[in-house]
Length: 433
Ligand SMILES: NC(=O)c1ccc[n+]([C@@H]2O[C@H](COP(=O)([O-])OP(=O)(O)OC[C@H]3O[C@@H](n4cnc5c(N)ncnc54)[C@H](O)[C@@H]3O)[C@@H](O)[C@H]2O)c1
Image (cartoon, rainbow, N blue to C red):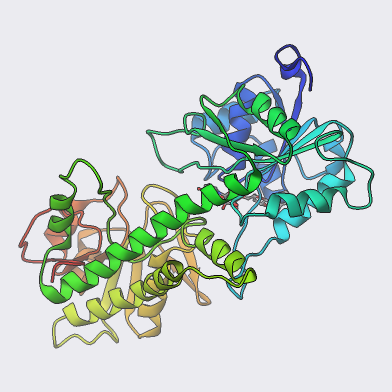
């Protein structure tokens, strides 16, 4: 990719994995004037993109319209269509397996696909979050049995994706981009490509630094949110308002970052990435006691919420048979994503305890939990009045706070969203009992 500035717009980019990370990245490169082929193994998604469907959870409607109507973008599940790719960016999932250990099967499958379309001069960039050492493992998998030399005829790097779906302040191109390469020549290729679309590039000296930096960011959040959840439980016992405590502490202009309690940490990244690090440490005979303890606290939060609901119900209303209405089951505000959502666990535990549980979420019409299909109910005055307890698990902009306050006989607010109305007759908050 010499004379990059002159030839860049002729470079063909493949984005492998068109989810929350891959599609916004594809949009960014198409906006930058590149030709992008989106490759995904999900045929329904490819059909949606080809049919120009706008309801894609990972893209705002205007971006969905832009990319699906652009003649610089095509979507495919056919590897043959990737043979002329100059740069391949891997954005596939890195979940936990059933044993809660890293499941690298998607990255490995992506590497095996690349092996089939390999040609000299290609640049491969891994964006998926993973443990230190993965990029080199994947590079070795791609070149195994070939005569390719990394840094001479194949260039491989790692650049962690730090996108925050639903965040209107920081978009994919304005978040500083950490970049790395297996060799200096690899790093140079990554810098050249990425500096043409990202506003700020931060090169680091090895893929392991970039891989570990991503895990540090997310493990830092994981540990701090777990700590504030533990403090919320302790504040419940001490009858001290955790929310006012945080408001007070955060007036210090330095040395304190505010984190807030809730029913547990969800999503594809924060509860998962620390366990990638923990696994890698275990391979080396090491461990992080902070990660272990934070995981224990996080896992216990949904059951704690259920215990509190049970305690808050009138003595005459046992949890079994009680009508419990949950508001918000996604893992974060204003996002249609329930991966690892702690609210789903609250729903499951309530259902298993025999409660008559229902939910409302403007972003999730239906949800399967433990073999049962639940359907989002409408928040009418009647539905709110009939609930023995309305539990706020996640906030969304569309939340009808006034109606909930007006009609619900009991609100258990785990997010302190009832406009900080202290001592309201019918509102009990997590961390303030
Ligand atoms: N979602 C986020 O907010 C976020 C933020 C930063 C980093 N990440 C990381 O980015 C990576 C991707 O996450 P995501 O949220 O976009 O996942 P996602 O599940 O939304 O999308 C992944 C896509 O990859 C496809 N896929 C799976 N295997 C494939 C293969 N072999 N070839 C081609 N496509 C394949 C899936 O069909 C899916 O469409 C993960 O490692 C995640 O931890 C995610």
